Picture 1 (cartoon, one colour):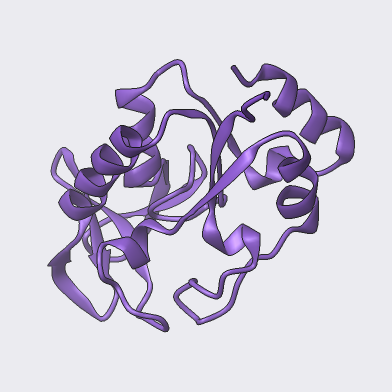
Picture 2: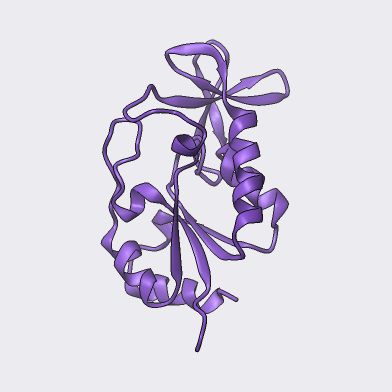
Length: 163
């Protein structure tokens, strides 16, 4: 029997109400289209490290040369290490062929998440800590954002690249 490749997918894209506001980002093309080609593993790093639903937003904040992940209601609480540690556990738990993550997320964004200064000013973009850690640990893993899977052709192209 043929084993389908295992792909981690941001849980919000699969319809799980795990976002900070208690909502989801259900994307039927990803949830339904991808499962024809892969075994999908839902993941929400923010929930996995114990942040509640709903919860205060978190944001990437540049402090010196370090990027922290600060709760917007408690700017002295940094969850970056927890997100990175969860990424290590997650990548070691599954034999992933790919990862589909939610754009612009402080945990899952890939090069498109707002980066703030300590004074709260937007100063650029970066990658979310979960995504960044996974990509450092597994540089050959195929990692895409939901915005890169917007039609059936893009889903098929992604599936064709999986090991």
